[in-house]
Amino acid sequence: MAGSNFGTIFKITTWGESHGKGIGVVIDGCPAGLPLTEADIQPYLDRRRPGQNRYTTKRMEADAVEILSGTFENRTTGTPISLLVRNTDQRSRDYSTIAELYRPGHADYPYAQKYGVRDYRGGGRSSGRETIGRVAAGAVAAKLLAQLGITFTTYVSAIGPVRIDRNQCDFSRITESSLLMPDAEAEQRALAWLEQCLRDQNSSGGVVECIIRHVPAGLGEPVFEKLDANLARAIMSVGAVKAVEIGDGTDAASRRGSENNDYYHTDADGIPHKQTNHSGGILGGISDGTDIVVRASFKPTPSIGQPQPMLTRDGSVTTEAIHGRHDPIVVTRAAVVVEAMAALTLADHLLLNMTARMDNLKLLYAKE
Image (cartoon, rainbow, N blue to C red; front, side):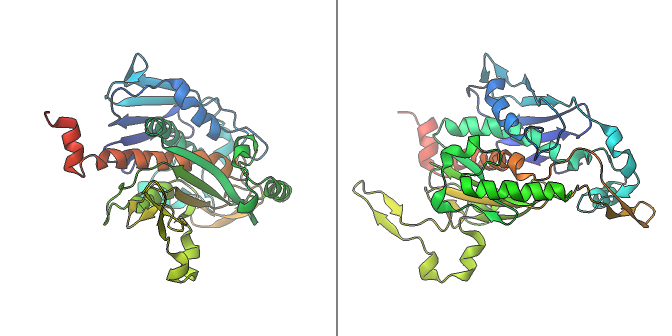
């Protein structure tokens, strides 16, 4: 299977299936000397771990990470870093009834057409559980970025029809919120919406927003390797993401240039600053030194308890209900996946950018 690799210098390869023995990732290109232990990675995996509240799948997995290679005395060695998370709570029998069915909204049918074989137990490689490898690798990338002062604030900005009010957001409450929403009033309305979805045996979509601070200006290329294009590609590769926006995104299409331009001003420090940030920190495909704002829209979970028409392997249509343990909404667990993919993209661009100017090479190699 092609397409399990991501990155140019900071490169990852994810592997494993939802109901296999484990899930993992191999990271290549991470610089030597980065302090790294399993304790650095585990909090990220805990953020996407299932079974944390009534709005996530009841599959109970510890998702405990093991570092198999690439470190010595708690520092990276520059060699490939192999990370493993073992599956411990598979219930393959839950999927026996759909072995001959193609579920609506899932990758079942195109997957079978592409490969001629399909692991129906939880979706195999197309399962959301594949994101464990991404998150584990993203934790390493985030540790690298933190050494440079780059930070992430990631939260849920919408669930179904409920949107946060940006004028009453308290970002310090995100970790305390079961829905990762910075707006307490919006969270209460979102909880009521999700309760109704549960009563109806239905699911909901939502939006994850990620703000990345202290990114230096100059990352990204002006043509095919634009930073915003690569961020969009990375996040769009996450299952269930149907749209990615940078900055004000689609709202920019309804404005005039005078309303959408970010005008500069200079403070006493002599450094240019933008009065607004409609562009989301990226201009011409290159970071401009202001906050990068990325937004990902997730579709509703297609596995719902209601009976649905399903295509059978022989081409007929039957009505069945999907059994098993599924998330009625994915954004609360997917927020860290968005953050991980953004971190991987930025780490790669930082390493790529080291060769953009002679100044950088002289800092490393010129003899005094």
